[in-house]
Amino acid sequence: MLTNLPSRAYAAIAGLGSAALLAGAFAFEHLGGLAPCALCIWQRWPHAAAVVIMGLALLMPSRWLMILGALAALTTAGVGGFHMGVEYGWWEGLQSCSGGSISGISVDDLLNPNAAVAAPVRCDAVAWSLFGLSMAGWNMVISLGLAAIWGLAASRS
Image (cartoon, rainbow, N blue to C red):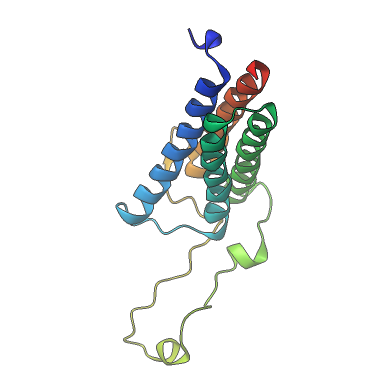
């Protein structure tokens, strides 16, 4: 059963869970054509950190690395929860995120009506959902589970 595994196994499960969530995010972006907003990108960084932490924990298991993994998972869960609240209108998002941006677009393209300029991605719009939860919501739920797994890893260290 899952309760009798060594700390390295829990770290591997949690780190691979973060890797799977990252792969899913990139698949939605590059295969599904759903461009990420700023909060979507912010949710990716802690998962990347968790994957690195997993690698370190597999090489040299340490209670502190397991705790760092849990903190990374909790961080992305927090950002995901905030993002979900913005998407569902529970609170306002960051002005720089939900207001749209034209940064990176040249003046010539802005003035050219024939230029193909993508619309800014807004953080307050649900791009995809399953069972009433947006991607940000699923990230929050799954990341809380990953944090619990990292916690089990820490308790076994």
